[in-house]
Image (cartoon, rainbow, N blue to C red; front, side, top):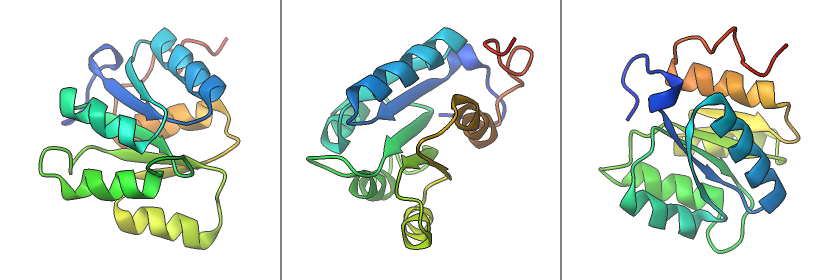
Length: 141
């Protein structure tokens, strides 16, 4: 897990998103930057991934079938092995009650959809306290 400042190429991120094109695009960009990426289409799949590999960060949608992001966050926070993994929520539910619920359950940050990839990268960098990305972002030119 992330302790102090890590480099991108040693950081593993678990992406949890039921929108397959968005999941693929996020994974592609994060891998292009140098992150190791695991993915799941819902909270239940994410728990299966967590049983095999503990990532440095979880980025999860809230509104998903099978097991939603709130329940995933609750289960992650209640597990001794996973409880300290930083957890960024991404959601199109960006009203105060949803924001507060996510933060009360232990979310590290909340990025509203639709988002600019740089907003997500800023949240990742801040949450993990990563060393600065190459020229801030290697894709920015």
